[in-house]
Image (cartoon, rainbow, N blue to C red; front, side, top):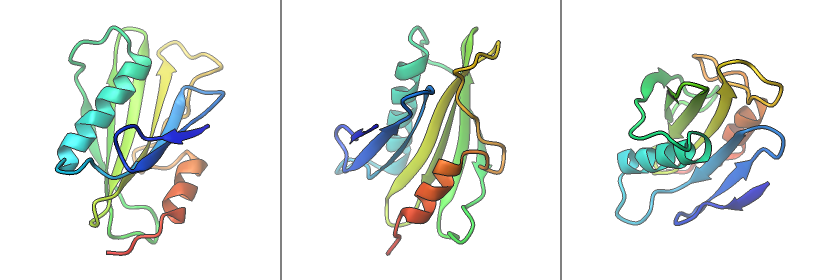
Length: 137
């Protein structure tokens, strides 16, 4: 399910069957990339961890997608007592960002989202999104 990325030039793509989605977009006018990352983290927490107050995020660098050397990425995770949330956030030099987010229960359930591995692999739709984005500095 595609929708506008509220307040940004971009789109959100929500999985209709799993607690997951992807996004592609640009920071708001005057917003730097770090602020954009924090905004997306807050959006994802609001979707899945409704009672979380100031969740602690862990982060690890992600390698660029194959054939796209000009991007950088981070794989971020947070959780509460029942669920884990993952956010992969990639940015490119021209100021565009995209990524994947998902939630799974700590006690696995059938409707859990897939999580990416430490290399950013495991969700084919994200690889296809990365390839589809034309990057021109």
